[in-house]
Length: 423
Image (cartoon, helix red, strand yellow):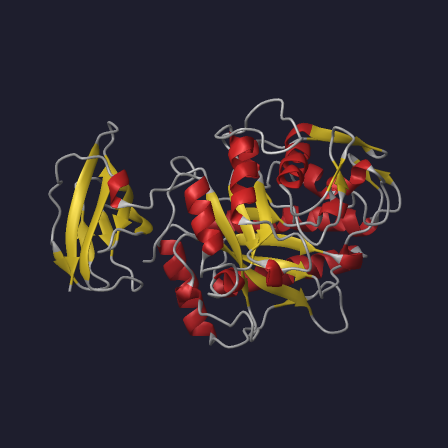
C-alpha cells in the first residue's frame, strides 16, 4: 500500500498529475512507485493509435516491465489513489470516423485498461482530433464527435459491469476547445463542448489547460492573459457559470468537477507558467479564502473546487524546475489546507495502536475500521494520508526508518494522535 487520499466523501480535493511514459533528459523518467504521495490522481501519458490508424489504441511501456508497472498501479490503488490512462496527447490524432472505428477504439481501450488495471481514462485530445463543422452543443452533427461520445459511454458501461463500480473519467482540453467557444464555434473553437455536455454525468474532473493558450475571453466580455491570477479566475469561472456560444449555451459544471490545470514550471510548457504566489492568490479567491487578486470579480466563492492538475509529475520532481523539487505539490498542499507541520495536529490523547515498532510492509492495527491516518515524518513534514481499511494501515515502501506521528478522526469526529516507529 502507498500513500493515498481519503475517499471522495471525506477528501473532496485532488492533486492530479501526468506521468510521462518516456525519458526526457530535462524531466527524467521515474517509476510509478516514486510518484510523490501528494498526487492523488496519476494520469499515465499516453495511449496512442497504432501506426496507420486513428482509432486502434495501444500502450507500450518505455522503460518499466509490465509486471512491475501493473504491481505499481495496484499498490497506488491500495493506498487510495487513482491511476488513469490518458488518451491522445499533443502528438497523436484520435478520430473515430465510422462505427467500425468506434467499436475498435472501445475494444482496444478496454484491453489496455484491463491489462494494467487502470481506474479509468483521461481524454487529452488535441490538434485535429476534435473539430466541429456543424450542429450545436446539445446535438453535434460530426461523426467523429458522435462516435467518441458513444465510445466513452460504451467503455464506461463495460467497465462498470466488469468491476462493479463506475469508471473514473477526466478531460484535459486546451482553452480554445472550451472557453474559446465564446468567440467562435467551429473548427477547434468550442469543439470539446458537445463532448463535455454529453458526458457531464460521467465526468469526474474537467481540467482545462490554462497554459499554451494565449489570451482568452472571460464571461464578462474582457480579455485576459495567461500567466495571471485574472486568467485563472476568469477561465475557471466560465466553467462554473457556463457561457453562450453560437452553438448554444454551455451549462456550467459544479465546482467539485473542476481542477485548475497549470504547468509545473516554465520549462514544462510553451507559455502560461504562473508563479506559486499568483496561483495561491487566484485559487484562494475562487474558494473564498482570500481577497480579489486582480480585476475579475466573482459572483461568489466556490469552496468545493476539486483541486489542481499539472503537466507533469516528472517536471515537478526536478529540483531546478520551479525553485525546488515538488514545488507544485507543495503549493497544492498549502492552498488546500493539508497540514504541513505537526503543529497542525490537535493536542489530544494518544490512541492505542499495535505494534508500535514496524518494518516496511507491516500493518499498523488501528482502533477504527475505515478512514485515513494523517502522518508526519521524523522532522515534522507532512507525508500525506494513509488509508485505513479493515482496521489496518500498511506501511508503504516510501517511508524511511524513524519515529512517526499522526492522527485520525473517529466516527464522532474526535481526533486521536498516533505514534509509531519504523525500524
